[in-house]
Length: 208
Image 1: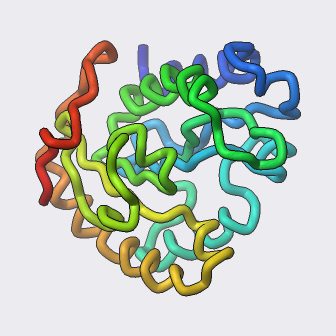
Image 2: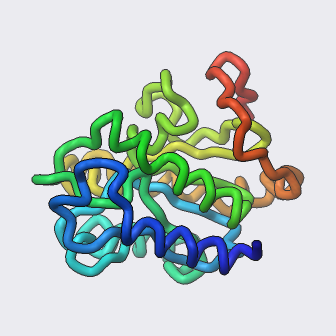
């Protein structure tokens, strides 16, 4: 199945999903959006109020900051694919629960495989944990890490800078590294991981 068709199919499945209790309180599911051949894929944590209203990721204040960060490296929102580890808003914007993360994991993996981005940028600790379950974001942010043949860069969530302004320069500096990291990731671009492949433990990671 071509990437565009697979992403459309995932979107339909997500909009009707009842795998966890979040479907009871959602208004609109938020599958994600962006070009099917995006070189960069950003993975956030979960939809907030505005995302739940519009069915689109990162459309609130954090989304505006993300667009500013993209502009700083000469990219537009339409150049990248943006998704979340969970596709429905947790009530009160609480942290996602393990069963909710598990329920959405297959959708996210299918999106990654369909797009096959050169680089995956995780935004926040819950999306980071999808690849680096035992890492601390304060220690690995901005570093490029090869996981199962794909280049992963963990970053603070843009919302963190809205609550803690001292983080803004750190986030901006991490984003400034992305153009060079995209070039580094070129040699890994042909790799496509099998859907059934087991995640590697952090001790097996190659730090660049």
